[in-house]
Length: 86
Image 1 (cartoon, rainbow, N blue to C red):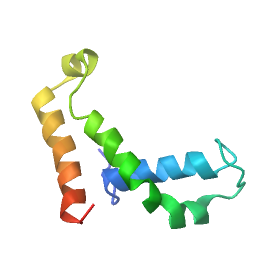
Image 2: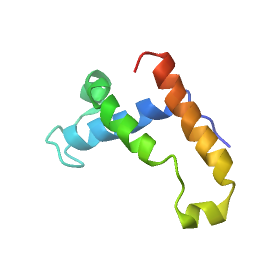
Image 3: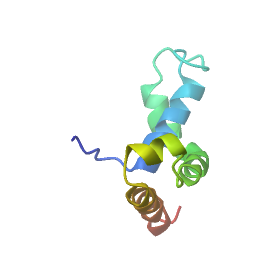
Image 4: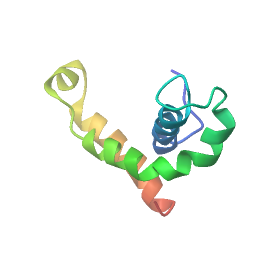
């Protein structure tokens, strides 16, 4: 399984920034990459809110795997951000 070099919070924040900035989504920038690189940090709080919501799996997720492991993984992602001062 591939492992990202970016934190989960950063990846979520980058997606949110991309959606807001890129003309491929809700924005108007046809080449949004550099702007996303500059702006993603403005979306960290939104990313954290999303991740906090994901701590508890829904019934379909719980039936697919280990709910306790899922919660530990999400908590680990949140703790990285807390340690970084987020």
